[in-house]
Length: 359
Image (cartoon, rainbow, N blue to C red; front, side, top):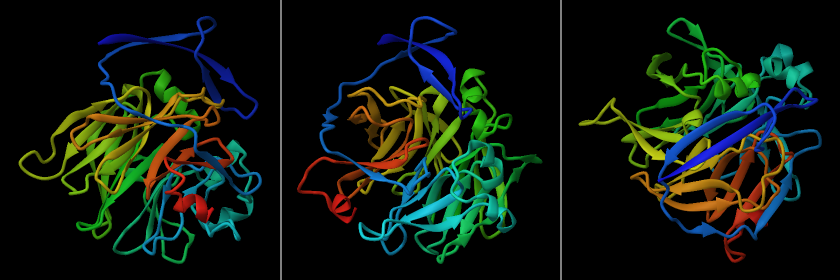
């Protein structure tokens, strides 16, 4: 066990965003966390590549591939979902979350003032049976896009009489046709995300949506910045990242422990999205909360097994900012961010670079 001391100063930038710098003077917020971290192997950071987004577009927050294996698709800051068509054609617009009437305002600008109008899609998942794309939009709630893309259909924006303020992430149980998702706060919107952490807000909720009945059920309340969501390979439990608590919770779905909750893993940072890999392990992105590049060798994400044990750390290259997701596909890693104008790709071996080759 050791005591970890964190000091932060808030910087208000021209775009209205907040950045956090670790310093020992100025206006500070101090937090001490007693944690015990195991020793785990760290992957090399020598094979990073950057794939630029279209001009003026930033914030590839989350990724997924469709039922045909095409993609990746990513959610970006101007309210759109982009699809990668390969090195020759690059990125193409697949869908958008803003209602049609507002489309003329959402022209690719990354102006944060337009977020409530244009939407800010965050987590996204394809339903592996229906092949529809489900999206957690920070302002428009849970939405869905058909196979052909285009305008999203709003599915849910309220629960228990209250409107969602900060819809964040989701995962889908295709066999039972249930969507699990988070609302990070009932007080603050995504543009005020720093307030959620700074005030110790614990109004976040974890919910499920039934596409057949169109009903929303609140499963957990009183969470601290509920964020990433990931189902187990057997669909017997679901993980929920609590960003402000630096931990990941496990919510059991099947008997004998159905509807019970426990701490799954305490992680060395602020967890953002959680993505399961093909082996049934989980990658938890650790968001440094800064709109400035990470320092070299900073931990960007950790791999955790089905029992919550930390197995591996993915270190940075000094270029990533505010890492939102670490997604493993075919031995390669897509790294998301809410601020960068590119997708960062890490490959462990030059012999295993199918994604890099497709870029």
